[in-house]
Image (cartoon, rainbow, N blue to C red; front, side, top):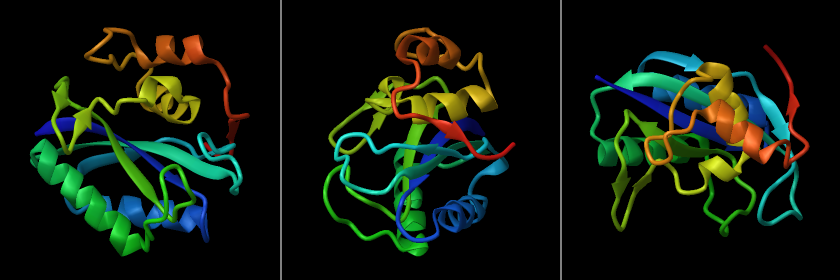
Length: 160
């Protein structure tokens, strides 16, 4: 079993329900699933869209990295994701942030996620789950990375 960390976000429809449904569906292949509190954040990239709800989840899986990626994409479709444009609105977005301490880069998949260390809306929920979690590329903890970026998206904790 490998410990994995995922980031989840939504800004279309009932975002809280979309995230809850995604977590429920993810539990089919991830055990000991834990979810961080929800956060509201301003959109990054394309800003002419509604605020996002974001969180992170951790769990253990027997899936290989590519299988986990494909499973996450299936979950997105089951929740109702419609592909629009890069950084556009979405019903649900699930990114693999960490897969154990592995570093993977190929034409379809990059783990750790290539931009996670620049995103407070990913780092804060990760820090809530495990502040001492280390980025296998930089060796820095998610708490250290979060301190370096600060509050970029007017991040607001909603629960927990």
